[in-house]
Image (cartoon, rainbow, N blue to C red; front, side, top):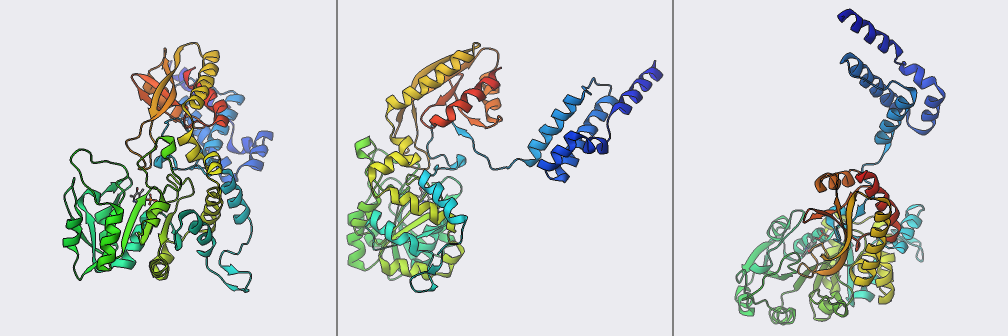
Length: 468
Ligand SMILES: *Cc1c(COP(=O)(O)O)cnc(C)c1O
């Protein structure tokens, strides 16, 4: 009996093709044309090892040629695919930091390809025929859309804040309200940034209330800066008091101390007509006389990752000369993306239409409802074993912007019959492309706000595959 078994295994093992045989087959030659040789060898070896193991353990294993080819192709796919890949954001969170924050507008994408596929005048002044400055390219457009005297862009807003503090207040005191010592996701904590910049934090007021007098009393001969920070991802409500930007500017003027505002999101247009009331507009903050304003490029602005510094020239020039700036400089891809994105803002209507972040935030609930209905209809047509319906819900802006604003939205709610909702969520997340959803009341939720029309096809297909 045991002997028979051994013989059987021996026989099966002898049926396994050799690496060399597969490599020299027609299929093998085809793979070698498409994939790196190392990967082809690895995929074949892994497949054979797996089969050998199955046989040795007495497991039934499909040894047909088609099956082995399919296994190798799967492995080749995995080996040769990129780690960073696109996915479908069905969470409804528009500025989702984990999912890459803002999607760039068409013009930005075109310009990035255009500039990075060629030499450019990145640091070359073609008029003068000599060395130019990379920061010069964004100055005109940023001055135009923010009304500031001067502008500078670095790697991200955390870098912008660090640089400003280091340049304006190294070894000196910076006055900040206790209510604004925030932590933004991804380890940006104001007191720690302050310490890294070698500026000394001088906290004033209390968590819920800070008065002008608190700032005034804190000013001394070591004071270098008054800093205001947008609370971004949280709000203090109830018995509260914060000092207005105007009052801080006046105080700063009287004592000849510059005032800086870390705005976080960087909203360039007035969102009040769209029911969003608590996002300060960069231009208004600049107009109120704040000396230095910093904000992110990839939050509400809807551009590439970057930290934008705008304000009085006397300060931006000092910042630009700081050797640290060199270590945080942006590359030409970012510059190209920013220039094209910012150009859209010359015409606000165009900005709202063409910049995906703004478009997704400001689209009308009716429009979202139509998309949700379209998705649901497609799903209902093909999937019978799930309970599918369109429901009103609310989504969030994300990225620290408008934390309290519930944006009315429509979602497709899916309750599978032969599968747990957690299992469905996991299958979608691990699919190709991955589909990121949320679970609510034991149903899977697809928020149509962040699903783009061109993604519906692959969204529906993904759900179909995951449920079957
Ligand atoms: C988001 C945020 C930052 C950090 O900006 P990044 O561009 O992510 O580096 C800093 N300050 C505030 C107030 C923010 O909201």
